[in-house]
Length: 443
Image 1 (cartoon, rainbow, N blue to C red):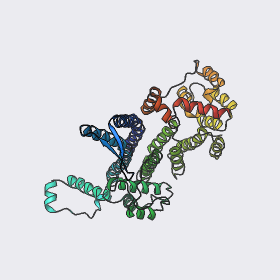
Image 2 (cartoon, rainbow, N blue to C red):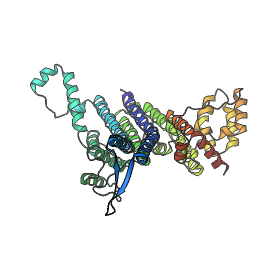
Image 3 (cartoon, rainbow, N blue to C red):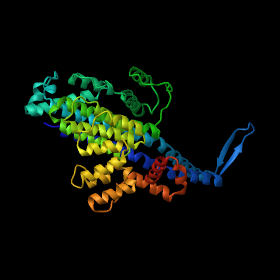
Image 4 (spheres, helix red, strand yellow):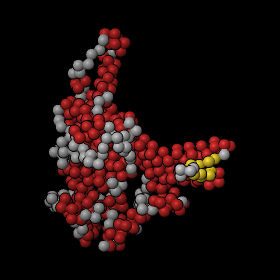
């Protein structure tokens, strides 16, 4: 058995997370014009039809003709509803993040019982004789038992989910897991929004304090909210935890499948680097490098290179060198030697090695065009000249498509002057990002 189902379950969850994350900024951008239109209509109507009066005691109120009252009520309701959208939509999408994690965990438990049938075979859960007759077969009975077992686990708290897994696997899952307190807080905050309209309860405080969550600024009866920064932290937390949990189980239960585990974990990390999600990439690459076992040295080296590469792409050259120079690369293959030279910024030697590798070596033209390792080198004329000398053709930039949400946001900003002014300090376009990088490089 291999980890294909583990991988599929994880990727499905990560794609759902990305979908929810992309939905929030797009929706919030559209809410702005919606709120403005509702507000402007109400203000215009009030200016034309509502009179402000003041009694003898100085108390102010408004007067409106009876025939205009229904219009006023509807316009007031429209304005209130549009304002509520700014509160409800982020909260609803935040709750959806946790719901997706629960769905991920549901499937993970089922896969766990498939990999280790003895976990369910040893269950003390009982079936009546009538239930067994109705189920008709041992296989159906087993599926019924799994369903009931998973249901009973998921009805518990998120902390108890991990208690259950640690007991089944006979291993710690929360050791050296800095994101644990964040996970507890966001799952408990989710409960507040589902059951208490976001108002802090004593139960929320009790659970968070038990797991060493910093609650210095939060009090009972305080109403919590979801701003973009908090939402993104919740996304990062669930992403990181799901990857680490999946790959910890994979390595524990399917030791014969380390090759696929290493490759798929690297694919996730590489995609994060390509998307410039450096915080997540750094955490997961450290997790990868800290593993005790790897399929082979080549795959282990890939994690080390990408960990250093993340620092390099964040303009932290000394950190990149510190990581990459912990190993002697002299006996490694040419692709690793080239990475070592690039990350140490020995560019002259890079060009010499590129020519030595040639067009049929361990680094091909696609690597030169898309590997983030060559991001800075691609801007140099000498790189383009060397590339042409090796492959006999001009170097062409590969324009990796943006996420659709980014394209939509940029288009909205371009066509809406008011929106452009409102978000100019909050939304960074691909072009602006590139300009910023070029300025930093000149410094």
